Image (tube, rainbow, N blue to C red; front, side, top):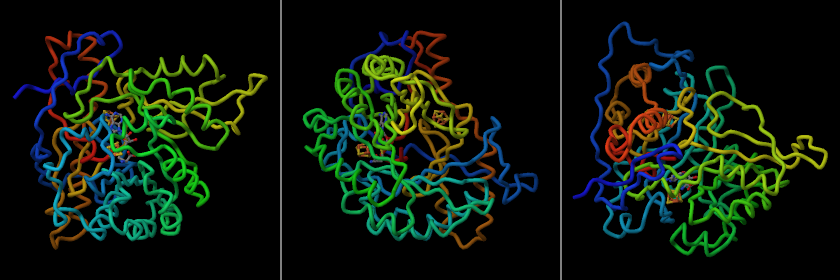
Length: 404
Ligand code: SAM
Ligand code: SF4
Ligand code: SF4
């Protein structure tokens, strides 16, 4: 078995050092880290000021509700791997809605203010509205309503937008990689048409699931020609379009640096036609750098909407990363690029006091020092990744498992 050639990441200068594409055999079972044994000096149970080992608070929890998807995006769940032989988690392994809600309460006790449901395709999870309804009853430590959102491929959104809103969902992020059917179908790899996703976005808007964000992964040589049409289409529609650099998540997508379109190049392309100016971040820990449209006089015009750039490959943003990830089966991951998680399921399913779970999460978070994107940037600047891939080539869990 060859070592996967994926799992590397670099600045533009290292784009040349990319080896052949190899599709590895994978298993999600990369092993668990042990949940720290608690002592009397461990962090307090309900502590909104909890900080990790790099002084970052815990504010954002991403919960994967399924490892299944009806798309086979080549950059996430390539067909060669996620085929009829692929073994997904059995129903019994999934956290129930009650278990997810209880776990969410523990995270909220430690400062979480926002929950994003993801997957796989979250709308494939049966009765997801029930979970949303349960979560929407929770309040943050400061007494505010929890910000509940969801990332979806949009395929089932037209049908579900209203029931999701009625259940308490606040807003959605929809993934769409182009407006041209041939391009989009080649990326979702299941022949899914653009029009159905656009219908889903329209239904979400009509249901009041906004402000809506649209995520576009830009893969060089595949869909960069869709950047301008997408910007033109969403400009002035009250929808923020965010361009995501193709990332080296997981180990199955055959990632190569020369397929990454750096955000700087996307911006340059946009500016050949559209007048844009940088906007201040709206909150700490924001993943996207925001740019607003200018009017004919060169003034920022908020009514035209905005675009965002998520530049995990070329511009790491680990220093204020306040996100934790809970997998479908109850493992806590501290970084999108982690190879191992902490198995919380025994605690979640035990009869112990809820505080025990909160305390365990606090102990794990307080030891967190993950900053994968920053480290790989540093490693790759200081060394030739072809001879010293080091950290960058470690096995990583798949994004469809951990949740995007
Ligand atoms: N299925 C849902 C969807 O596609 O919106 C939610 C899960 S998906 C893993 C979450 C986000 O991750 C999507 O916006 C997707 O485009 C993005 N994503 C997946 N693989 C990626 C990769 N290799 N690089 C960058 N973004 C990726
Ligand atoms: Fe499915 Fe989303 Fe991954 Fe595409 S990006 S395969 S829609 S989970
Ligand atoms: Fe956060 Fe890890 Fe991404 Fe850095 S690489 S921003 S620590 S998820």
